[in-house]
Image (cartoon, rainbow, N blue to C red):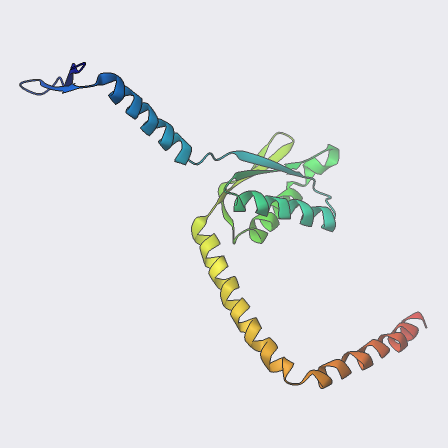
Length: 180
């Protein structure tokens, strides 16, 4: 019948054997292993480097990228690189790391607290599914409230259009006063 006698449980008393097609059994086991590998999440560690004297625009751009990485489920290693006399003020780097952690708190949490390592200060952020779900729920709730607010504002479009015109005229005299 082209079947094999396979010992299933050697430790049992008496040992247990089955009559089966062993090549088919091995093939199915390989397929199950392949499927489980496919479902496994692959978390990588991304790195974002900052400097103590970073400008506002650069900080915002890099922090947005950190938020994107956390949203994709990656861990992020945030590094502050010090040069020369900057080494004398590690509190500046610590302040930047704290600010990054605060701005992405809705997506991730600090896994490794900031620590000085030679000329670099590093911190590791990891994705936080609970915080992401809570933030998404909050955004959805605000979206529904905003839609209701637009409907009430839609009933009175004329006064809303009249208000910006005087506001635009006011800054010109204020600017003239500032130059005096």
